Length: 245
Length: 331
Image (cartoon, rainbow over all chains, first blue to last red; front, side, top):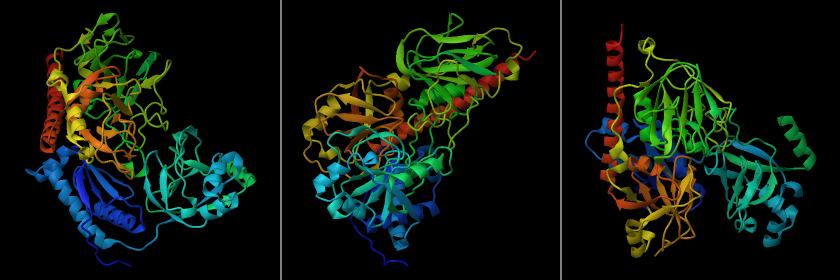
């Protein structure tokens, strides 16, 4: 199903240095902006140019990285950044027409919310006034689109959590967050794919491997997927960890 | 046909031009910090510019070659010696079986590159041999070189050199100095949030000497100077960042994102280092100071195009010289 064309004027295209150009659709996290970003990405995949190195999508922006000499060879006189900016203008005009309501692939992620794996559950309960059961019910109570993957390999940014579950980042980030840790921060929730320092409030852990260099593709989640968390107890968690090895 | 690591340096890794095209998975590009020196090292030994090289910091590794080979050492001058004889950087070097390469001091720069003819026999991951230390991928089993490592070589000496007895430098080199010294300032283009800075801070950004502090590494250079002041400051959603992006940090400091930077970031982007000046920056290290100079985007693009064309010319001319040398020495 295709939505009617919506040529907003609230987009901006700007250079990110001399080898990348970004198009930004504002500073909001919402499904409509996300759908437009994905539609532009799709347009770019179908209309690649010589010298395109990468295309990185984020909450409300899309960035193309390019090899300046390869692009120059194919376009002649124009400044490369001017050419790429026009290209992104087209991606916006033509890509925005292709916005679909189609949902992405649904991925179910088991999470154990037990104390041993949820070092910040107590703090989250205290600041939100929710019980542990309410936190779990709210966190598993809806599906979240993967808005972007970034920060770490395979780190998927999911949004938006229920208003009652909105908490701020930790004042002092942890030096070590275990792989598989499920966190919340503001309207976002996400899973640390590898051991890393991190400032999100950790409310559980998944036994799934979110990132594995030996697997193709190495990441479990991609932008556009939908995630459903489901609660498992500690025994099930341990069984799944065991099965993994 | 192997290189043996007799002694490890503080950070020696295999790097090429990076793992490009996987940003959507959050996988960063990485690759050589000084792309000019890495590509020049390859050119000198007759390789494609983007072949993998060993990037070394000081103190650097001590290496032993168990076969005759053609190598080069570019970038920083760490006083390289082959079997107790000092050798030049930025020249092709003929190394005999059993020879060792050591680095005895830091004369200039921060990162040196060693290339071998035809490259190293390491398995690429997602199209690149670059070592990603954070996730333990690429390079030699995803980590820095350590004592006892053995790095396979794809080939030994080119045929034409096999009968030549003399080890040492071949009689040509690359002109490289101007890449690092033509201007003592590092050129930048303004970032999306440049205008959030107060006029005084914009002025300070351009006029002050900035010191690279000790936290700096392959991920980023933290710069210290007078804190940046903002006329405007809002929370930003994370978006893509690039090699050379200068982010303003909440404490008034700033960080220049280098080769191992994350794919996305949410701090204000006040500037971007001109790509053609990143090699210069890559040869500076903790304790060094630098000054910035503003450049418009068209000029930054022209500088980069001209540097890339220069590398292509270097690759071609080195190949020609190697071939001519081979012809002349064929018995």
